[in-house]
Length: 172
Image (cartoon, rainbow, N blue to C red; front, side, top):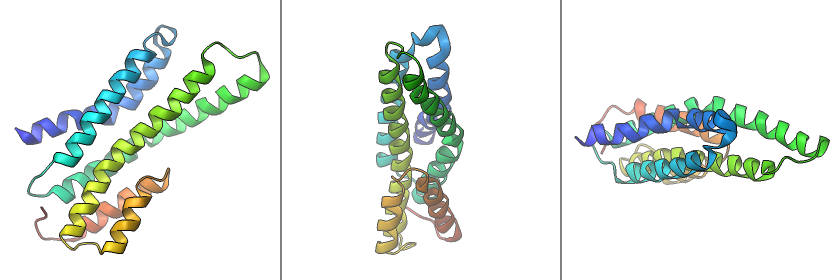
């Protein structure tokens, strides 16, 4: 039952940024507040899942999920960046639309929340790999820090998973 419970919020987190973007455009953004609240709830549930998950292969599973989430979220960050740039240019080129600066700020905040949530999976995988002596303490510290830096987090997630996957023993 535990493996099903952890997978449901994970799969929701994988597709949720695209639901978030769709919520921006449906009915002129009237669902934006509801989507923001649901996003925060989903991210908190996923952070709890990451930190409380234990299994036969904790490091490998969490490393894999951290990497998958970060790779799948990459197009969202590209779209968010482009929308942010267009929004910033429109603020200077034309009279500001009511709520546009707040919408841009919320997009930045929600993007950071997505990144922190996926980084929790990577960080827990790093801790498990360190406990199993797959990575040294200094490497674990470097991987842990870079998992919270934008764009370096994707490379870090791939490195974490590849280091864990190379190890053949069962990890806890």
